[in-house]
Image (cartoon, rainbow, N blue to C red):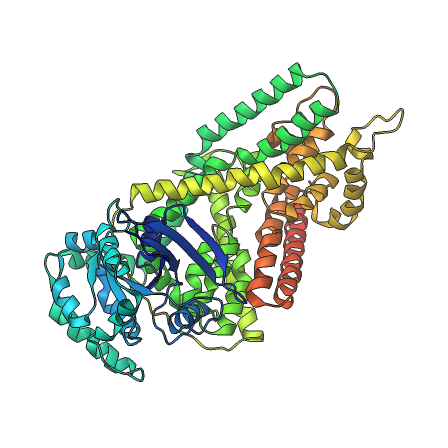
Length: 628
């Protein structure tokens, strides 16, 4: 039996309660993502049909701690549940999702939603974890206290939503008029003007009635926190973890990178030998393989970096790092809530900037947006790895890899510069006040291998897709600009010197000569505006077309090692610490701030810092190295 019209469900819950995992479990691939009209908040909707034949339309509402909205995400959730958004039909049933391990925080939102007197079901998620930790929840008693169905779920496991679907089927098979009246039976009858104190008092009463604790799980977590959150030792542990990450990025990736590099070179030689000389061979070997292959080789390093980030996130360590760094960030005028967006920016500045929506104060949010691109995103890693691999010896200092030390220093430079810019920004344009960070620290747990694998697969797919689409297209365009017009009769230099790209590079070289950039680097900076890692592919194409005779330049590292000086290499590293060469980042800043002023200001200050830093690095290195 099926309903004539799909039942509309709204998933509501705190951030990190497993709501999105439940949404994915229910809808699978039958979902679409867009933005709510007039705002940048993401809207996720999906569909599914149960075994009983009931059809459902599911909206995953943004995470919220309260219906007294303090952020854009919470405002959307409030407006949809209140039925005040013209572009969103109010849900037939509200599915409240609560983390069973953290009911003290989650129940506040539950009680606020129950005041709406709407048909509601409570899904107690992560019940398997709660039981392992000795947490016993009397769901029958909780159901009596709240007056709504309470269902246990485990969203990350197959079949973990079966009980919830059965409960929803029971509701879907009722007449709509009868379904609409169900919300009036909720037992929490405080009116809408109930204060936070009254709500919290009710939360404590319910918790005392339904929860029994067994075991030593929390005591173990507290013992670990005594070290991790120690005011001195905590910083040492954090520094050591980050240091080990960057050591591993070079040490662990050597073998797979060499395999990819050898494969690309072998393919280039094979194509070169099989195809007759001409435009098509030049496009494939000098344009596509030299450009795309130069970027693809860095996939192992990016995956290793994300393996560590995902592991730290899954284990519950990252919120503790935020807590540890809160006062340090407050000293430069940043909100403690800025840590998570800034940490996200190590992967990519775009989701990091979008994550600033959780920051309540508009000026704190703007300050975080303005410095997020200074965090060393994964797109910079191919550039750093290329230059470090070519110019920094692969040797150890004690037990440490020298190349890993240099990479660690570049990441530190990005963090220090971001803190310095935040300090200046807040003292010049913002309010000089410290906003303490309040967050709920999750329990420690072993990372889920399936989640790690999925996260790495998604990152690999994104990177390879960029290589096969954006980077490929830009390399073809750059190859064309670097190959035409053809050199005149009697020309002795490489064809690229007489091409459109060559002429443009010579003009730009005048601007970049004081910081040590040659015309090949100047050319590569232009397509690099689309995305930072494109610069590596651009260098591969440019140097391949700069090769003379039958030389194959698919190996970019020895080419730049032979043609650049050490001051030039160091100058380019300094440039990429600051330069905002990512159009998608600037466009998301425009969208999030609804103004052109922040992205233009960001472009101006970052290019200025990049040029000044490169100038100081290049000139200083020349003096130290005797005019090299």
